[in-house]
Length: 241
Image (cartoon, rainbow, N blue to C red):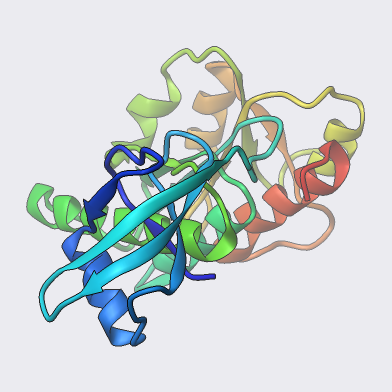
């Protein structure tokens, strides 16, 4: 059954006009009145709906039963990802959502090749938000991951947080897997550097601010692989996969 994000009240027994983007998608895939779809608004659970009318520029649907189904991890993992080259960030965000990330924090680190002006950053954030929505629709999540504004790594890593921060580094003596085996499931943030990794100064500053330096094993992973592997590792060890 097709799934769509619909950021408005979804009350059983009511008929609503679907958002323009959803209506366009329904028309593209040629759904017709009477077809069933699934809608979610990010507030928890999902609803089944039946298409009432499919016009050229508008689609209406009748909301039916609410289903209290969730697909979230039983702990929150935030992926703090230093900006990679080209379109890698799109792929990283899409797969992180599929793996259950509760938040995405884009970071500007010293070795980042990509530098975004404030205007370009705003456009990128809107684009990444769209990826979060479409990935959530595809993978069955009913809550949207939080997308933070682009942050400078040095100032962001010096901030205090209520939960643990992990900085992935090949210089660490302990691996994420070894650490996680001896820890209860908990909310954490995983920091991943750009193609050249975080600088030694960045790592030291983050650790001095309370971050835990951990490796991903004996092999050095690419930036687009490291964070996703960390999410999968935690899912396998702490549950939720």
